[in-house]
Amino acid sequence: MATYPRIVSLATARPPYVYTQASIVDFAREQLLGADWLAHPHLADRALQIERLFTATTVERRRGVVEPTDYYSRPRSTGERMRTYAEASYPLGRDALQACLRNSPPQCTAASVTDLTVVSCTGYTAPGLDILLARDLDLRPDVRRVVVGHMGCFAALVGLRQCLAALRAHPEGLAALLSLELSSLHFAPSDDPELLTLLALFGDGVAALLLAHDDDADGPEVVDTFCLADFAAAEQMTWLVTDSGFKMELSLRVPITLKRNVRAAVEGLLAPHGLRVEDIAHWLIHPGGPAILDAIQSRLELGEERMALSRRVLREHGNCSSATVLLILDELLHSGDARPGEWGVMMAFGPGLTLETCLLRF
Image (cartoon, rainbow, N blue to C red; front, side, top):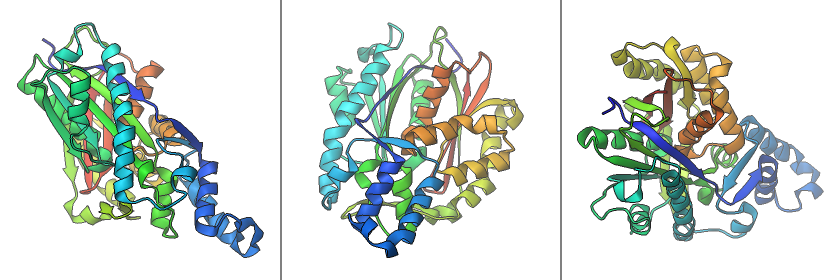
């Protein structure tokens, strides 16, 4: 049996709506300045400020389960948003897991899944996706289920850590992970620059993977994980349930805090395996925003080519919370750029202030 389990399959699902950053700028202007803002010259400066804020994120397009102009034509309560989450999340989660099983080796069937971990911080239902998908995809009734909620952008790596632990305890098992985030259900146009930045940055994303001990699979080995939290900075990133959706608060100090801690987190991951930063060929860094990527790049002294994949996913998808790092891995695997024997590091950040990392060997 292989020393480390491999990702034997990875698949994504596409939310139905695609919108450009320019269209969301128009939406934000209408929400904040009024539909006829162009007729009022005194609003021109504010309109330009909104455009500059959106441009600064470097996001060019995103996907979502709702069309913002239509869905937010009237105020939405948290209850309404959760009903939309229940309706929209199920088919996307099903599609991602079905594609994952379809693209896996023949022995990796739905009936052979022993562990299912579902990750989402953008919605809640009960019975949840873990039960509904296990039932409808014909997973075994004794499948071990775990739901990871409200941990934010690093939660997919927590889910992957859970899958890794399950296979360490049950090496013959097959672990499935689903990360599903519908951030578009919590858009909230606001004059608060912090909230407006979130509208400019976040998109919806869905990804699933299968992890198993399989020497014949082509996917990367999941070698290890390491987590580091700066508890003194816990309040710099929050995700609060309010009457009008979930509200994120993101301090401008987050990039500074990450820059202060990232080298220790990376060394904690690499040192037990005799590795250094220079040994890592592929960096899959969660693009929380351009300033975060810049801070990580500077502290680890990474060349621009090492950051290109994260910056491209940010441009094409926005920040899709926990699913983003799996979207980056999917891009890398489809590119064919990862060669046998090369090392990769997955890294994501969130409330805590937490740095979650994972070591891959291709």
